[in-house]
Amino acid sequence: MKKKGVTSFELAVDEKNASLKSNFLNVENSNKYFDGPIIRENRVARKNEITYLTKKQISDYKPYRQPYLSTSALDHHIAEITVTSVDGTRYIYGLATYNTEQKEVTFSVGRAKHSDPKIETDANGFVLYNSEQNSPNNETGLDWYYQSTETPAYATAYLLTEVLSPDYVDRSNNGPSPDDLGTYVKYVYGEFDEVTNSYTANIKTYKWRTPLPLNKAAYNEGIFNNASDDKGNYTYGVKEVWYISSIETKDQLVEFYTSERLDGMGVIGENGEVGGEHLQKLDSLSLFSLIDVQRGNAYGYDAVPIKTVHLEYDYSLCKNVLNNLSAGSDNGKLALKKVYFTFNGSRKARFNPFSFEYSNCNPDYDIQAYNRWGTFKPNNDGGSLQDQNKYFPYVDQNTIDSSNVWASAWNIVAINLPSGGRISIEYESDDYAYVQDKPAAQMFKVLGATDNITNEFKSILYAKDTIRIV
Image 1 (cartoon, rainbow, N blue to C red):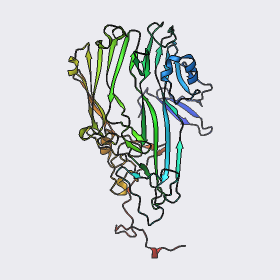
Image 2: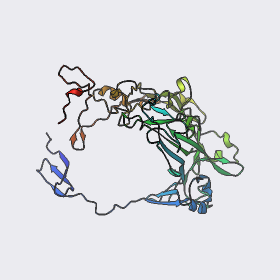
Image 3: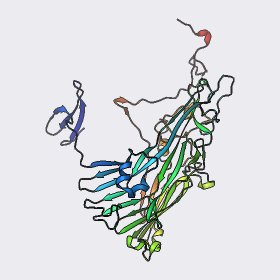
Image 4: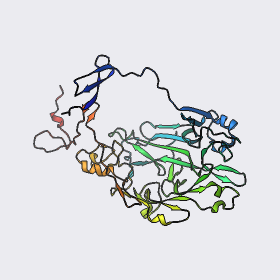
């Protein structure tokens, strides 16, 4: 029942012309309807202007940006995107990060005849293959199938490099520098070279692959009763990983300090094997007065930062992850544990950090432990079909409490503040009652089949001699 004076807004579909109408119902002053379709006659004008420059244009007109141009980019590729806001401020995304190689391979791994042994997979559901199978020489399975698709180099993201004020003027045509007019914020993805008096790119080449193990592919069983159509597949690529080194303004400088993380290792080559390039983690960042760290200044790199942010981690989450080769307690995924600050060299504030607590639901890594929605769900690969997510990836509707716990897996449940306060976080799984306009149905597990009412389950519903063809 609605209270007097409460106004509600309803949307209905006109059955005649299928246009969306709004029905405005005022409970207090009787019914009032405003008929007519909700139609946008003209395109809504945008207030921000977006422009771009190609690699060739950058090479011709902004030579100082050369270190940020990928060698994989072609001259006609977009190399810079500028967003100009209403007040004239320009946000320049001048660093295009590239995926330089990408290869998707699918091939037969099934047996050629029924007398051949059945395909075996490992605990992660991967199938082992040999050098003949992932090549045009494959003679495995029913159809000797092999397919390889290679994608040319493409930009995956555009990183922010400059924020310029409306009155900014580049006096020396060398990018943002203290001699320019107006104000700016410059994001530097490189290191300063004292010899050449310029920046060199801070870039790593990272080889990635799904799945990671050597000579193993994801397994596609195909038709369950036909072992000759089984397929294996993997995706391999090489990408550029850029790391920010500093943020500069006319009077301040922020320096970023990173180190290798134990997890997130790349692979050695197309056929996998963890042991390639390490990804980096942010250890700290320090704020300086620019005059204290300018080249040639008496303080130089010995300048004392105004403020430093420190980050501490461990590898306690999601143990036994495949791209972490460490042993013991360090074989999980990187987890942020503390953040604290120091000021002008004083470290007193480290005793009052922000600290983070994570859920007690911390299962080991399992590539098959997820449901159809992509959230965590335990997998029992050796159990019945209904216990294996590859056959039954659906949410278990009879274990709501467990689903709520699983929703918190590897997530933060509490943040302890320097003031002594505490922020607690609770999780629950998503649910829904309708699929479009139809009530959601419930799924039931089939316990077995029988041809009588005694509940004696059998492997077949009817015996062959009782079947009558009409």
